[in-house]
Structures are given as structure tokens and as C-alpha cells.
Length: 522
Image 1 (cartoon, rainbow, N blue to C red):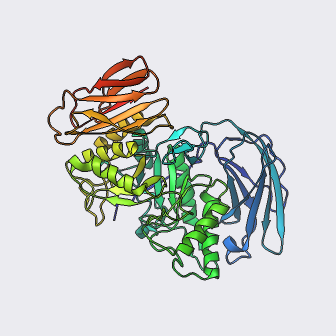
Image 2 (image 1 turned 90 degrees about the vertical axis):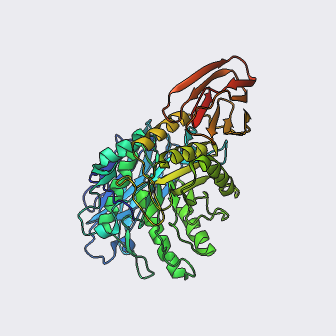
Image 3 (image 1 turned 135 degrees about the vertical axis):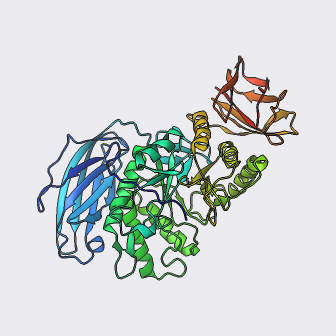
């Protein structure tokens, strides 16, 4: 299907603190000097002999209660990680001194632990939340804006499971490189979201989900730990798809079958929830409404961070689903890329949920001579249309052909994304879609955003991508005085600046441009 990408190293994400447990049957003394950055990951490892269990995942439970400096209590679960080790992870939001207690139990015996840590200021903005200013947008926990621009890629294809690690090679610009090179390249381009789609050109986490007991994959679980830590360390937020194409018991499940699915969901939340920002229930599959409601509701109830929930095929009409997440593959005329993107986003936004296109690319092949331009037009229009795209990346081979299609994000494409992300960085989170007044309007399509702090516009000369467009004007209405800067979306070059010394209406001369041009008023 796609290139198999590989991650060959571990390493804790910034802010992760690991405290090893004390001897097998001892109480852990408080460790008040342990410091965890705010929104970093506090991780605790406990030892308990697994020799007497045929299924330590289900037969032993680890529960941790954390008490914040304000006295608020949060109860989380832990997970069996292999050997004689169980772990618990938590991402604290409140600064100050925290206390915790934990219990390991198998129904016949139990062991208690306790400890403490101090949360100190860090560099993280927190988890992604739906914006209170614009319900089609996203912000972080601290209120700063987040404009997702994502990629998905293979993470160890299923036919590589005999390897000691699926993380062997990453495909970049037609060659195989290290994970560092791959992630650095897309991080430098401003890509800030990675879709990890389990079982979809990626390893799975379980062998069995059944009423008689769930069996998870120890080695693959550790691979997942490596992946989420490394992605976060490189600035990517994680969009995690829990099930692949065939979620278990999806249509007419019994009560015991649903309980088995819940146990797996709980395991995923306990293991990865402190690193993830978005949950996706399944990939390109459907389930009964009862399944979505039950499993989605359970996911929300056990997730201490209340991450937004999506699913594919998208089901935005369901109350339990927070995101409209369609998949979109098309090889349209580049002269129509902006219009098609705009119209699709308007359609997908109708249920009133934010739109994150879970997979985006070309139909049938990943590259052609105009695919980079189409990608640029789609990505810019998506930002102005209050949507987000996750490109299904196949950068190992140019002109790779696949049944559903993918996209090649090479140096040219990454350059375009870099300009876009530079443009959007810190953009006014209160901005909304605004009307556009262009002259002439017959050969230029325009899109605009207006907020109390900033205004932006994006123009596309949809009739001619070879000859410069001259003599156009744009009338805008700003709420405060500022500086209007025109840039080239192709290069990031500044094409002109104008001082706007008062709020109100202004008619601006559009600088000469070929294909597209963008304006931002600070």
C-alpha cells in the first residue's frame, strides 16, 4: 500500500519523568523533589511478579489516585508493560505539589504505594481543545491557537512483524533515511500533527479481544511508547486511531463482547492518553450506532484529559463524536483546487463539528507535475475555510501509484507548507470567515478571515498560472490600525507593505502576482 516507515530509537519525551518502583513488596516513600514540567508526563513503574498469571493484562489491576495542590482527585488506571512491570502515566495541568497513591491487586492480594512530585512551569501549551472563540477551530489548554497541519504514514507494515523492530527506515524524497532526518524535515516544514492509524499500514497492539480475555502485544506496545514519545519530542501532536478496518463486534455485540472492547480501550487510554491529543475510533469502517455510543461514551468516561473523539467513516451527527473526519482523495484541475476545497469544507462543517480530513491526497498516484501546486492551494484554502488536512504521505517514491492514492510531500511541497505555517503561527484565534470584495472579481477568487487583532486574505488567480495578474484591488474592513503585508505563498517573499493608520474600510492595491497571493494585517 504505502512506504513502511521506521523508528529505530526510543527516548523520553521532553518533560517525561520516570521513577522506578521500590522493592517488590515495599511501600514507596514520598519523592517530593521529583519535578515534572506542566503538561509533561509523570510516569511510575511498579514491580509485581507476573509468573502466576496466564493473562496479566486482565488478571492484575493497577489504579492510581492523584491529588492536586488544590485538593482535586484524579483516578487513572495503569497497564502491564511486560516482564514483572506495571506502569502508570499522568500529564498534570496544575502547578505545585502533588500526592499520589497506587494499588496493585489481583483479587486475592494487593500492594499499596504512595509518593509525591512537584509540577513546575514548562514549555508545553497543554492539550488541544475546541476553541471557545470559534467552534470550528482549536486552541491549547492555555488558550493559545493551534492550527493543525498533519501527515500520516506507515509505521511498520504488518508483513514486518518478524523483525526485532518495525522502525527500520523512513522514506524521504525518494530515499530511506533515519527517523531523525524524516521527522526533522517535516517538523521544519511546520507539520504539527501525526496520524498514527493502528493496523492501517501499521502494527497492531492486540492479539485477541474476546470476552474470555484480551491478549495484548508486549513488544508492539513498547513500539507505541517509542513512537508517541518521539513524535511529541519533534513537535507533533498525535491523532491516534484505535482500531483498523474491522473493529471487533462492531454491529450486534453482546454485553460481554462490549466489555472486552472496553477493556482494550481502557488499556489504550492508560498507556497513551498522556501523549495523545485526538482519538479516532476506527479507520474507514463503520459500526452500529449502539457501538459508537457505548464505546465512544466509555472512552470519554475513562480519559482523564477528555481528548476530542473522531471516527472514519465520519459520523459527525452522533453526539459522542466531536470531529468530522472524512477521507478525501482527488486529482482535480489545479485551477479548481481552492474552490473544491472550500465547497467540501462547507459541506463537512454542516453538522456543526470541526473538520479534520483524516487522509488527504491525490487519486491513484502520489505525484504529478501539478500535484505540489494543488497541495498548496488546498492547504491555504483549508486554513481560510476553518478546516485542517492530514496528508497521507508517501515520500519514499515519486509517482508511486496506489489504489486509493496518496501524496508525495517532497522539498517543494514542504517549502509551501513552511510558508503557510509561518503565516498562521499565532494568528488571531478569534478570527472568523469574512466576506471578500475584489476588483476585478471575474478572474480571482478570494477568502478572508477577520478578528479583533488580525485580518488575513488569500487570493487565487484561477484562470491563469503563467502570466502575472496586475491592477487588482481588495477592499477590507479592519477593527484597529495596523500594517498590511503581502506575501507570496510559493516563496514567503514579502511583496509589499502598507501602513493602515486608522480602523475602518481600506481599498488596497494587490501587488503583481502569479497564481496566488496572501495578505496579513497586524
